[in-house]
Image 1 (cartoon, protein in one colour):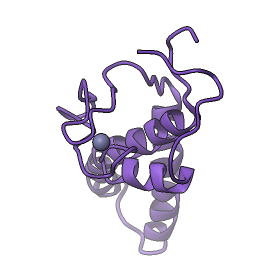
Image 2: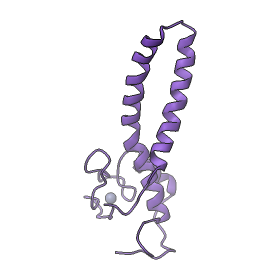
Image 3: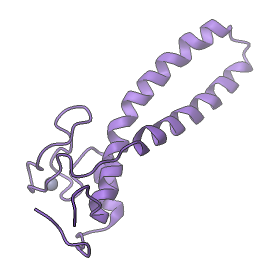
Image 4: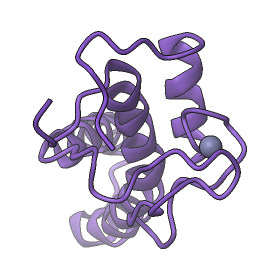
Length: 127
Ligand SMILES: [Zn+2]
């Protein structure tokens, strides 16, 4: 199945991104976008839109997540510095938060990026 370059999607790009952020199909907003943690479904179970490996978010995904988590942690560490927290205790607090935040943010950010790519019809397939 291939789409032409001037293929227009129904709805707005904001709706596609919002659906992706909720890990839902950017097209219908109902079907699940991921079969497992970060693995897209082959087809949306509700509307049949094809995903599988069509939309490759690449290194933009870790870049965005690291940027967000990094800034939050810099702020948190600087704030904790006011309370003279011991360095090892600081690490014991910060490292688990970094891990959990990263793992929690990856699916919705990948969903949002998939929504953008889906809306713009930017697939890895030749047009
Ligand atoms: Zn769908």
